[in-house]
Length: 85
Image (cartoon, rainbow, N blue to C red; front, side, top):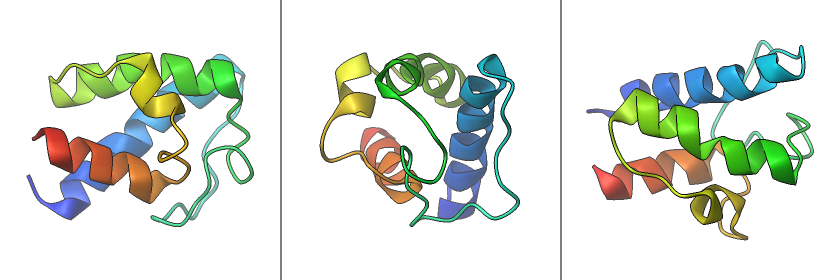
């Protein structure tokens, strides 16, 4: 799986979480997009993000991974996925 495919699935996972709050992704999302400041994800949103990520990538993600200090941007999420592939 290449970087573009990872980014597409990560953004699909983020959209799944944002839809729970009746929000949607901004038009431009890139590796530098911040999960909290730019997308408005709170700690609960970041915790439940592990579920759609697991579904989209057929991998096991735990809440602590998506809530960690090292996972602050969309790029951090993509890197987390790439490490697990």
